[in-house]
Amino acid sequence: MDKPLLEIIDLHVSVANKEIIKGMDLQVNKGEVHVIFGPNGSGKSTLLNAIMHLPGYSIDDGEIRVKSQNIQEMSTDQIANLGIGMSFQHPPKIKGVTLRNFLGTINRSEDLEAEIRALSMDAFMERELNVGFSGGELKRAEILKLYAQSPDLLLIDEPESGVDIENIAIISKSINKILQEDRPMKMRERSAIIITHTGHILNYVQADIGHVFMDGRIVCTGNPQMIMDDIKKLGFSGCVACVKEQKDQL
Ligand SMILES: Nc1ncnc2c1ncn2[C@@H]1O[C@H](COP(=O)(O)OP(=O)(O)OP(=O)(O)O)[C@@H](O)[C@H]1O
Image 1 (cartoon, rainbow, N blue to C red):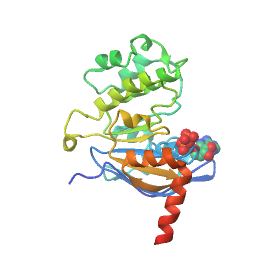
Image 2 (tube, rainbow, N blue to C red):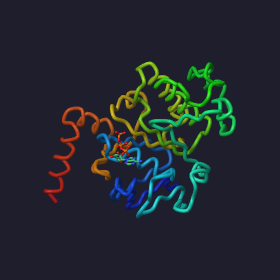
Image 3 (tube, protein in one colour):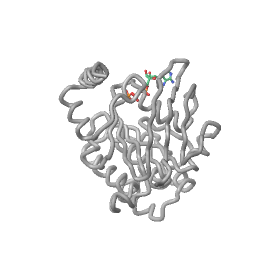
Image 4 (cartoon, rainbow, N blue to C red):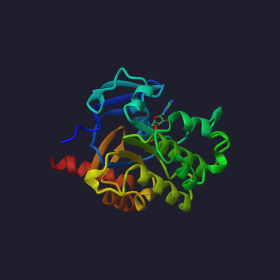
């Protein structure tokens, strides 16, 4: 059995002195795609930002292990070098650095030029990174960045927000390529955590495990499509009622 790619144990994270993640556990194994659903402001982005040790996110308790290594003392760069890549919900603009220069410094893929064309990013290569990019262009650039980086674990924050249906299909194709969807499941080396509001991405990217994240914790885990169907029918208030009912039965 391979070691888990990511283990999160009783994690507590605060931002601006406010506790946002209140004790959560998660394990991601090689080849698994996890999807996290949750209401606005519940702490989903905070989770991904904390895994990457971005500034402003304080890990107050608990542990994050990547490939069995405790990453507590590691910098964002060191975590990325362990094989974790993140695409942001709101990617930062970087003036003075072109998309071409940026990709050149991180590229580990063999066929980047083909993927630049597949994501229709040819015309953006000499532009400053994310400066003036539209919503769809930002997301295509983020996924191209992940493609170049070819990480073992992809952290994808809201790939479909601000993106039209055609672009979701283009972005998903690229995500599937990174996730080696052409291989039988057991042969896939890469994993992902995808945060989604609409669940639209599930029409294109096959997810194995779904989680509902509310008030700083995972409150439910199961089949992603079934969870999404329930959320569409009953809303997140339906999740609250379901979790309460299950607790009452214990
Ligand atoms: N730098 C910050 N300063 C103060 N509060 C912050 C900061 N960053 C995040 N928060 C707060 O932390 C909470 C969780 O935010 P987060 O972005 O993780 O939620 P989310 O579940 O990803 O939300 P959404 O679905 O709306 O993107 C929110 O209440 C947010 O206002």
